[in-house]
Image (tube, rainbow, N blue to C red):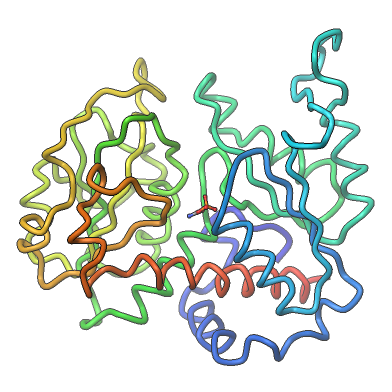
Length: 317
Ligand code: CP
């Protein structure tokens, strides 16, 4: 594996899940792979889970880890070519990337959608420049359109808790005061579509995901109907993809919040969310604190998904 953005990059999903469960049992068995190798984690945006879990995964593999917060302590970076740099940005990404690449063996990048230009976001403009100019394997730690480490951790969590071979998994939009990125729901949909689960997406009209991510999922605009007999309920806010409302807030209807009444419609379903989550906006206290809430297990599996990905990148060197 040379890069990690899409579900296709991980290859056969059953093999990846088997490997994840094996790594989870024996997470320190591969320290030889990372000896004298360095992971550079670059954050253009904030993080708690990704930062800690990815660093832990690399340390489990015997790697050295460097973390750069681009907006705290580094020179402010220009990302557009052709700009006359007489403003507040002191360095261009086109020099910064190969310099960063010269100090490490693998690069993880977090760079969210800016919601200013859909084409820039959906071409993964920042991440693709790291792939092109760093000379090193690159993985997404949530980029403009995808969060594959999260989706892989979500899949591992579902596999660990599913009670039937083909569970019903429902991705539901939920309200939020800010326009959040589409990366988590995009990747969740992409990875669920790669399984043979019964996969349903529910959201208000206008919140359709990009067709390349929604693909064969059943779209149900009635949330209560979608939740009927669900085995897993994955809640997330995202902003609209379709023009002219790309990246705007269209709806903030509190009736989409996941409550005990909503969960009562499910097949004693599990509640999932990638975190961070706004309690009593996305989900009530009672649901997230219930025995069926998997949010902590999902977050813990971020270490495992990151370790499998970094392990495979190391093995491909
Ligand atoms: N779920 C997730 O990526 O969390 P952070 O934003 O805290 O890394």
